Length: 189
Ligand code: AMP
Image 1 (cartoon, helix red, strand yellow):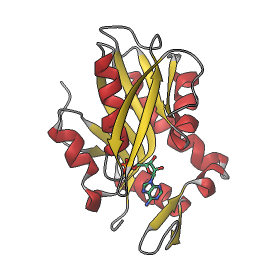
Image 2 (tube, helix red, strand yellow):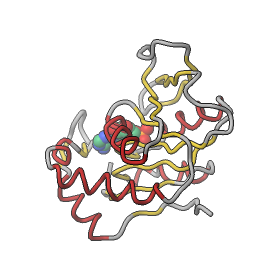
Image 3 (cartoon, helix red, strand yellow):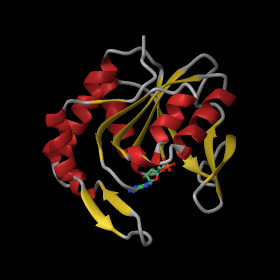
Image 4 (cartoon, protein in one colour):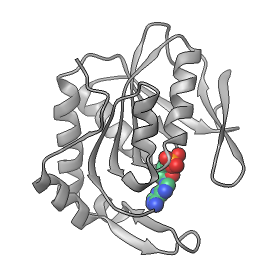
């Protein structure tokens, strides 16, 4: 049975992956430490490690689909979809998906945004593994979970490469019954 508390991988993997992620101070605005995974993507060994650790964890679990969040979540989502032979569902910002969609509005730090999923991409009763590059406030993953529930399906777990524990997104997800998993974490915003 899945624990609803936040878990992460052992310290050696965590330290290695942290060393591959670049931090850009004050981007996109003052006070934000942007955790940039482009440096991780530029190192095939580090990307392989990222994908292999996640694939190993989720190869032991039963679920039906992988739900990847716009846009960096698509990268890890498609790699896991290939490795685990699971259908990939895209969660996109409003106006990008061509067929009939389900839509949910959610709060950002400033203002609101809308997230969409193709209405026929998840079936009632499906279990969906959600993936993104990073959990900050958890708002985007919560919105994706709402879309999954609108379709009559449920979330297996929300997985990310990075967690920002100070922003309490994982706590927020855990409090609504969504288990979380990340490969490494960074203090601060
Ligand atoms: P949230 O909905 O607040 O959990 O935000 C998660 C999304 O925002 C992820 O898709 C990240 O790509 C992006 N994001 C938020 N904060 C950061 C940060 N400090 N560094 C890099 N990406 C971030």
